[in-house]
Image (cartoon, rainbow, N blue to C red; front, side, top):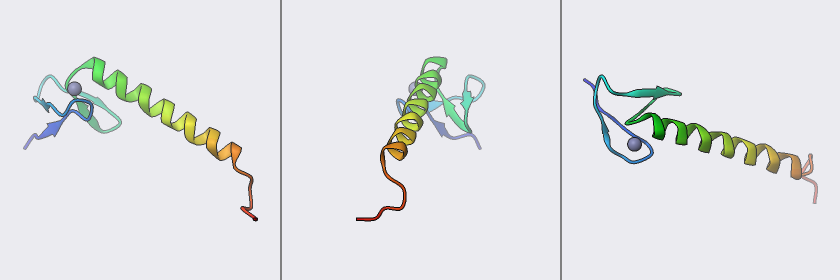
Length: 59
Ligand SMILES: [Zn+2]
């Protein structure tokens, strides 16, 4: 059974036209690209936050 929804717009992804990225299915190349870009930005933000916080966590 093929039931996938685009995480960007929630549209049902039809078999045969799906774009797969990171185990997720997208309705279009555009939304796949947007997802990859957003994912990269989030990863960057998280690594920056980690850098900003001092290690050990003493108060
Ligand atoms: Zn979409």
